[in-house]
Image 1: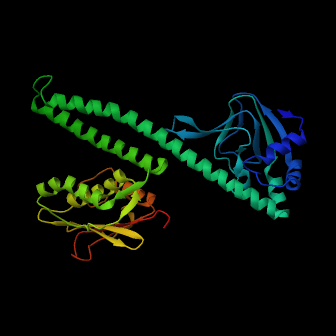
Image 2: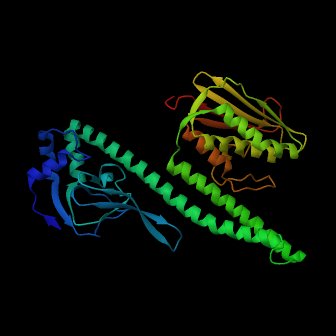
Length: 380
């Protein structure tokens, strides 16, 4: 519903809005002809995700929820609120950014008055007044960055809840299977044992997938909490954890970790996950009698860690894809979820680091070597 526009109040809202903050009165006067006021009752969809964005909005009063569509399956589609925008907030800012498609749905939570702006008219104004365009687009970049960060955090929380809700009943069923195999409900015959064992194996694989997806959602959407940590201690703890597994398979685990390795800013448990993943792969694909070497060194702005093995190696055709999500090698008998190395790469990159793999290992001429570097200072 359109309302009678009061230029004085509209100008005041624009002056303090996310989009036009910092513009002079004269510059705001050039924006006013592009404005009109509109009123929406509670629950009204102001604009929809996926539609062409010809109109932008500044909230004058009331509240607007930003919603994204979640395609859970072909038949099921839900929406999730990522943010609530109040007075002065900008809506449908993609009207100034190609391809001009709305990325969220805007729904009024209460009776809401907005200032509607013609997006094409604004673009024309910016061409004729570059200073106005520069300041407005700079403000827009800040709005978009903030919205993206908030949306990522919200999606991280949503996915984490979903995966945790999936994990709980699966873990319960796995526990029941263990009780059955342990004879809690009476002795099982061989056929019954085989059925329960196969069921337990599939449940274990599914639980591993859910756990991996929880990790993936936390890293991809939720970010990491950084603190000053000892990388040497992280590596030593991982070696201690994995030593029995390596020893049980007849592998030699060699470590060259300098005690003076500097502390870095990082997420301790996630970096442990990186080292554990690399060691786990090395143990899995190295036959009995092989050697796994873990080295670390200090290099001016970075700390470098490498995990090398004398195992079966990685085919050259697969090397470019080993860090892809859900990619599993074609020539190996043991298949996992296909997220281990992808998660490892995501964690390293979340620390502003890099990871690479070579095969065969240059030093031994066999197996493979994974090397990752982490900056001592995240600003590097």
